[in-house]
Every structure is written in structure tokens, then in C-alpha cells.
Image 1 (cartoon, rainbow, N blue to C red):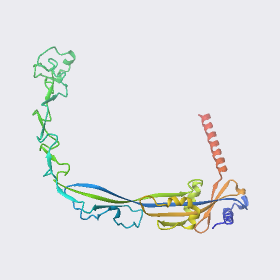
Image 2: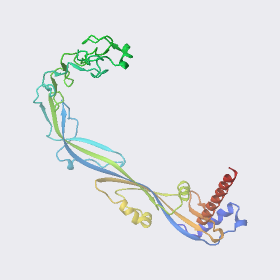
Image 3: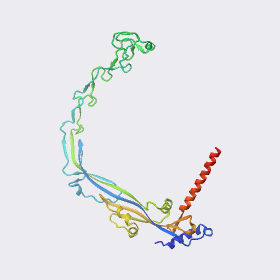
Image 4: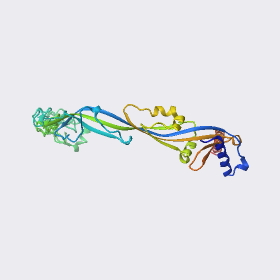
Length: 353
């Protein structure tokens, strides 16, 4: 257990090793604030058991699946690793029923064409070029010349052909030749088209059996185990990021690994009882738990002789580690100086522009 004497001695030694003792002097006292750091993860294995009715279209072999009478009583050993996921498919004993489908051969009458294999279709469609409104400049697609072609239409005579209805020269749409409509491209003018739902066969696969003529039904039980991970970081705030990061890298953390069967060590229970109690409490569906935690005690030291510095001291691998950060007052002074420099540079840029 570190004492305040150990902490102050580590600060003095660090100042001496940096060669700052003649200039800054060695502190004789200081204000020490202790921080207990705790980090790690808690992984829980959560198990759920569900049942559902299943339907398979065709034949299926279920003999290789485990069977059960009551799903909640099916024995399954606890996981060795709570972080490992598992999904087990089971079959309720006596629930499997294999039977032929009432449809017979897996086919039923097509619901769209009612077994005919084809659908009614229009013989002709409106011309896509003239839209039936200016099929012929002389007869309007009627076959009777009603007026002379307008002047602007005569200028486009090279795009017109002889009308099949009224015989006007270079007056009709080149696509429909004055008729206003063309033969349907789908049925080629036959008036019927093949039913796409059944490809003209008049039948389609029965939906219940998927066209197999056979079904298998059973009660399926599923046991699912999924890991749920919670990260722990304490304290969540109040300690500078750089100080904590330095401690992560160089600190001699005490490590603990706890399962759901283990009790919390006294060192952790004393420092973090209120924090760990809810986080290590079993939750609904939990069957196993693994907590990997690390603990470090860190001291924040402020000494009167060095009021612009804050020292952070913690156990390292071979000796106490000391990390220095500017005090909040010094940080504000540096920030103010930088803002002043930026303001001067901005004014100079405006004067020179």
C-alpha cells in the first residue's frame, strides 16, 4: 500500500533525475488526492429457449436432431467460455408428421388464367409515334380526306408515307401508315397471350407443399446462447485523458478474473463495492459470467513549489511512475497566449491585405 511519504519521495526523485532540482527546488510537502482506477469487461452468457411450429415443403430427415419432452427441462452443460455463441435446434418428441399434400401431385389450377393457359389480349395498340391523333395529315385516320395538310406538315413530308386508308401521298405516319394503331407486339394480333404465371401450362405449384406433393410438420425447440458484453471504466470522468493513458501503458495493474461462481476479492470489494455490486448481479437468462478487471491506485500531487505543474504517481513494473501535466491555471495561460498570438496574426493579415 503506497503512503504519502512514498509519493512525495517519488516526485522529488523524478525532479532530481530531470536535473531540475537546482532551479526549481525539491518539494517538502504537497496536496495528494487519491484515485482508484478500475477497467475491464463483464461478459454474460444469456440463454433463451423458444418453441415454434415448423412446416417443410417436401421431405426432410430430422433424425439427427436432439429430441426433448419439455424444452425447459432439456439438459445442457454450462458454457466453458461465456463469450461463445450457440444455437441448438431440437425436435419435440412425437411431434413430427410426414404426410402427402391434399393437392396430390403438387400442382393446382392457375389462379390467374383459371387453367386456360392464356389470357385475353388486345389485337392492336395505339401507335407509339403518332399516338393515333395525327396518323394522317389528310384524313386523321378516318379514311376520308377532310382537309388539306397544313403548311408546316408539308415541310416534313420526307418523314411521311402514303396513307393506307385515304391514299394521300406523303401524308401518313410511317409506323402505322395512317391507321392510328399497330398490331399488338405481345400477341401478334391473335387476341390472346400466354399466362406468365403458369407459362401457358394452366397449372402452378401448390403453395403449401411448394410443388412437392408432400409436407413435414413438427414442433421445433431452439436453445440460443448469446454473449452480452459490458465495459467498465471508473472513474468515468475527473481524470485527465493523458494521465489515464500513461497509466494504462506503464502502470502495474492488479488483474482479476472472476466467474459467476467467484466472490469479489477484498481489494476490489473495499474500493468498488457500490460500483461492482449491480454490475456483477445476475440478470434474466444469465447462465454464466466472466469478468476480467484490472485495478490501479493513482495519486494526484500538487506541490506549492511547482504551482504550474500537477504530478501523477502510480506503481510501475519496477518503480513508481511519475507523469507531469500542466495545472489548469497554466493550461488557461497557455491557451490565452495562443489566442493572443492568433489575434495579432489576424490583425497583421488584415493590415497587409
